[in-house]
Image 1 (spheres, rainbow, N blue to C red):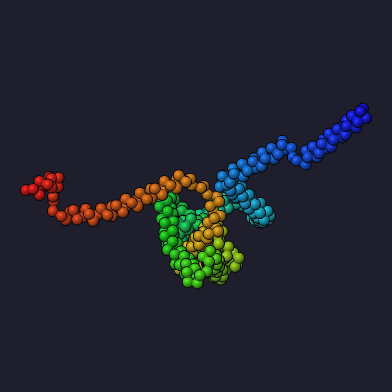
Image 2 (cartoon, rainbow, N blue to C red; image 1 turned 60 degrees about the horizontal axis):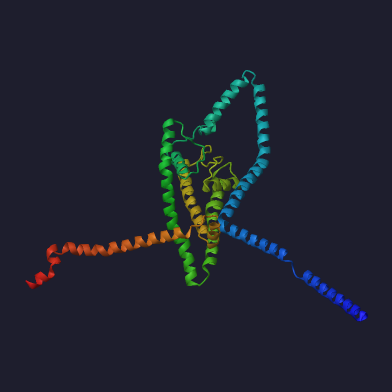
Length: 375
């Protein structure tokens, strides 16, 4: 009996040991509930972060846009400084040598007198007046030059080579610009809107309806072709013409002037028609004024054409503030109320005209129809 009981006890222990091994094996295979909870919490937190980013997507895009713009400014400053600073240093050294040599050759002239003369010359040059003999024949304020100056003011190009000298001219320039710049914007907007209909929208719609091409593909191809034609007609061809008419300009400098002018940057380092004994100077100035006006309109038409592309519209919407649904509903309700009121006014108009044409009927007769019928 003791042997049998001992065997049972051994087998019982052995059986429990097998069950323990199975439990440990299953525990090792199945994940712990604490680790699963942590994993689910991390997943839930990442989803909340994604929802938060998606909800404020416009703000994030705008932040990256501001950061990118600032980095682009810094990049431009670094490049311009590294490229132009050595040339400025060479020019300063050359001017110092010329000044020292001039004082050595003219001992009767002191350095202070020379600097006073040069300061006055540079001050006059900033106002567009030169003391050189080969530039004394060009007037800055004849009619054609004044017309060219007015066009640069209204188009906000502003070369800066000619500026008002008197206080009255400066005051009139302020008043003239305050009125003229919004007037110019209104004029350009109206012209560009009309030109865009005939140059952009109708051709794209024609190829889309007539030939069945995709509207987006046609719009992209049309925008590229229009940009190529505009660059050819208002940049390359005028640059070649300016390089011929201007003695001191090469093709790169002429193209530089066209771009700086039509982009309304207007640095003023290159101004046409200011050379010595310029032939047909008045007619040349009028032609440049017309070129700047037409070129600005062409640039705005191309810009409007590219802005109407579906891809660019989607890209721009990334940085805009989204309107709330309540605001959209308010705008829709107001629009519907305005439309209904206009329809009601249109419908009430003929009725009022008919009442005015009809003979006057007193209120008592309309209020007691039975009495009148009985009588």
